[in-house]
Image (cartoon, one colour):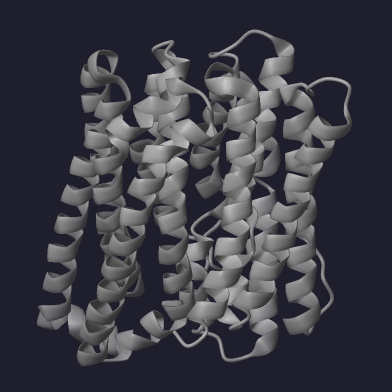
Length: 416
């Protein structure tokens, strides 16, 4: 945790710029047109886990099992190759999905661009930098990426004769993200690899290479929990509420950033804590406490900002944000604790139970959404997210504590 402050400064600087990008687009496009950007962000939340394939949660766990540098380099190549293989099928599927919401070709391509821009975060090689204790290097690259994106939007709006189409904006954002991923991969390889770089055309497989099918399915299920009801909201033909919810949700991403950085910096120590019951219990309490306290403080700040955002955006139609701020802020605090619990569960190789709770939670959330969202709109989306995610966290916590204290389970852990 000693490196947490500097990494938080870098991460929050890049996140602040990323949030400014969203705010600038919301202000310039207006609440109704911005709903297309919001739709792309929601779809991107679904596809990000399909690019990540569980790497952010299990790569470090698999990597610490190796003792030779070459084996880790081979693992990295296998990990990246399989994740890149997801690009073509996901891109094709996006065009089909987007046609459900609009028939205009330019809008379809723009939404696909925004979706890939948001979803390609899942292709970041963040877990490689986590393992190598080189988080700061990646954070610097991401900071530069966000700055370039903001500069491009300024150039499009500042030097053009008229406001550029959404298509131009989405392609600029997408191109910058692709370039950033290439730079991140090269930066890690130059600094840490010992063999020549070469991608392989590998079928999807989970073979202790950071790819984990159970975690991938569970993460996609969690994406349905988090973003599925946003798509239901979009299907109700209420773009104003979708735009408002999306902006409020982006504020929660600032809290998620703190949670993600805290977990990233402690990821390896969490995996290593499994060597003894006492160390694991101490790690759980320590990480959950940090995430709860930090998330609570930041959620209070997010609530205040959400109250004044409609005035900054000069569009009264964004006022819906204030109605959904409280349940979202409570949810993001609970999600922080749940993040710690799930990472410790993965360290104990409890993927199957994690998968079960994720699938059950997503199914119940979508069922409730189909009933209540048509009548209560964005407020229903926020409340359902809070109730279902909190219930999942409680169940996962009970199961984790049980697993730690069952003698047979612990005996297997120590032998591993």
